[in-house]
Length: 59
Image (tube, rainbow, N blue to C red):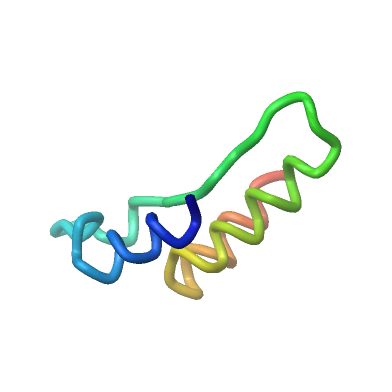
């Protein structure tokens, strides 16, 4: 799934005039690894700025 989203991102699917407002990530429920999966996928699929802001969401 991550590879497919990365391909779509690289092809410009998530591009818009306010690109910095879109956060692409993978999430799972009922699993203690959920935050790790979200942070990893957000880091892989987004710009550094989006990743940094996303990782601060629980602070």
